[in-house]
Length: 126
Image 1 (cartoon, rainbow, N blue to C red):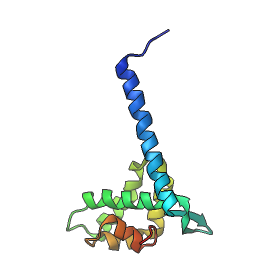
Image 2 (image 1 turned 60 degrees about the horizontal axis):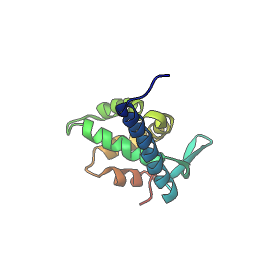
Image 3 (image 1 turned 30 degrees about the vertical axis):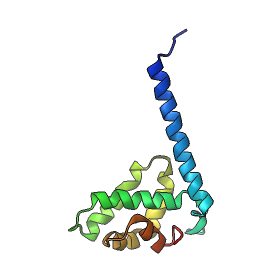
């Protein structure tokens, strides 16, 4: 029977702790009430966990990628691709981006931070 070295155990332990930390972060957002639900094509605040977290993640990611001279079309293109990088929250991210594309393009042109932008569109509490 193969034996695992200490380094392999440390790697598995690190992966486990990372997954737990992500779960706790999502649960924290959930307990604050930053949730949403899709019903009849609309996303409603405070029903499905992770929407506020996903919104802030998208905004932070895009703020780093978008230059000061970015056109609305540049921003829309990046919005269309950013959800591929979020992992298991990809479907929540896509629903968020699809519903708020025009508003996000406008908000990403401001100097507002991620929390403010996500609160402005009603995804996070103010």
